[in-house]
Amino acid sequence: MSAEKTKSGIIKGILYLALIFLAVLCVVPFWMMLINSTRSGNEIMTGFSMLPGSSLIDNWNAVLDNLDIFRGMFNSLIIAVSCTVLVSYFSAMTAYGLACYKFKGSNVIFIIMLVFMMVPAQLGLLGFYDLCNKMGLVNSYIPLIIPCIASPGTVFFLRQYILSVLPKAILEAPRIDGASELTIFHRIVLPIMSPGIATMAIGAFIGSWNNYLLPLVLINQQDKFTLPMMIASLSSVKDIATNIGATYLAVAISVVPIIIVFCFCSKYIISSISAGSVKG
Image 1: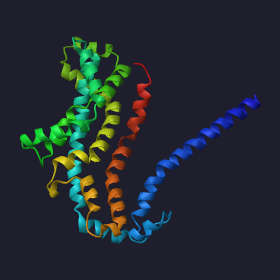
Image 2: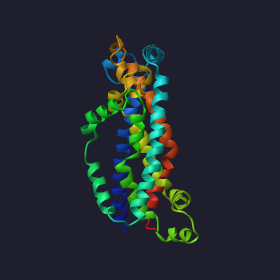
Image 3: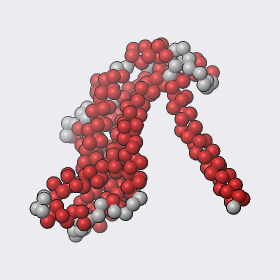
């Protein structure tokens, strides 16, 4: 027994060391970003340091002099919050319909949805820009927000989640009592799906917040630039190459809303994993 306990202890020790190592790997890039945001460009070029520099104020002034970072954050928040709400609600409704209703062609629709998941979105970028241009939607946030209604990946995840946590018997009682399908969805299904929805909402917010390519193609008015566009333009500003720390500082600021959203919703991720592992 002692030999088995020793062997088990060694295995656990190795696993803990591996997890600690992976955790350090995840933290190091953030730590480098924070440290470099306090250093000058010349100091950054000399190599990495574990200690903060003394150029934080200079970097902050450089950011404010070259871009309206708060306007960029506001623009990005409008798009990210709107996309997150649309993705969460309509994907949940679609997933509920595919999981709980059996109708002719439902499997075909599901297969088509899986096929679209495998097609890179960049392939339709030129056609999408041409469509938006003909509809007069260039320099508008509408083409950045409305397409979020259709999210095959989110629908696929939530459909599988519903199948694992929602017993169909729960739906029979309100139907017998005369509740409408929308009432059942909003008052019964949505609360049960909330952990899975919250999990996907975090991913949707991060993806929309960090989206760079599509806004770059559709937006050319500077006052409508999103934060990633402003940060990218920061590197092309005159003399900014001598102060790379300003770029690091702008990136660090852009990460703050993501960290806030993740910390606020992280408990739902754990709840989602736990609930999804139990068959209702």
